Image (cartoon, rainbow, N blue to C red; front, side, top):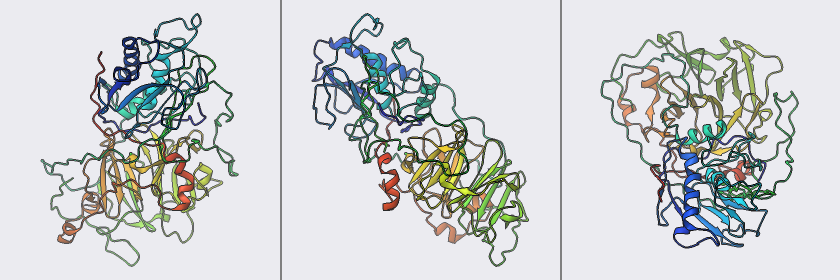
Length: 546
């Protein structure tokens, strides 16, 4: 197993045609094992995940299956040879094409197929324990840093690891974030504020998002295979934010230099239940209502009804929209008449001669963060906190990063996200650093594309991504835009009338073709992670039966 374990918000999408075919039914019968018993063990290992999520599984005797299970000995054609008994027990690939989702087990191991066997009295490795962990990777989960979690990367023993297992909270939250809980929503109630927009018609135009094709990049390496445990070399993460001087560089979360899924070997001295391959690399009709009173345009001020936005955030239950050195406020009564106004009228301590802000968000503790070029500013209400601004690389972002394009606290899980170019990061507010296993490719946010201008979440539980003069409404549960084509921002958010010119406009469409990098410098810091992120794409409707 490897050290890249913190947080596994994973790699997935909530919809996938997840059909499981144990290959033992078709070709490779494991030596000295009963095929029926093996199928039963694999069924129970998958049910560990199915009973805590909306996943179901169906056994299918076909190469069309999304998860193929093989027992191999030595070299078996995927570049990750098994080493005989002990050490590497198994490996699996993150979801994707071809090998994506597949799980490989070392045929030379002594596999125990009775999941209730007393492993202290029997020599061998629990097939159930290893399979349950590996299938977590097949479904898109990476390692967890929480001891006791099924996806923890280090061997912890087998007590309680039976088909009756109730997933630890960390694993449960991870699988539900990808595929949804059986009957509850994961995101908490969004604060209720009322941005201004024209009265919507009773029957809005239907929005039918196009189902994106399965990702073109398939995993080529399995996740870390199970091997003998070795002591961890990475010190525990700090419990407090780093001090003012730049923190020392963190180890890269992934030891894999390509953008493809990777099997991960697992070091275990006993029978080991942890094989891990990790491939980490994702309309509103507007009635013609009168335009609200908007201040007359003066030199330097943006045109309220004809502009893109630099940043958007919900602050104190109002929507703040930033452009250049100006901002608008949308409160309970709609767009405030005295706006746009200069940003520095509200926040004291921003740089003199301010020309723009790149991103803004309000933290859960009500402090406000501004990103401007390679610096970030922390405000308590209207006043800059002592010791700020600071370089954005203090947050764990790459030193080469020129700016943060957008930032938000996502209501779906309460976590903070930063976006820049083709990549995004999840930020740990308690530790004060971006999490391991990041950055990840923006293709996780289906239909949004790259180089966004702004993002925020509204009270309807939907996330809104902005680019140029339009926006996409994003469905957090389905992890995709609700309509492939953008909606114009000005009529919807500012109450501007639609014009013939607007009707003729074709707002930027989402980028659907996955790209590897936008520049050679950026590829240096994310190429080894990008390979590990491969998405699941079809509707998960399956049920495994004998």
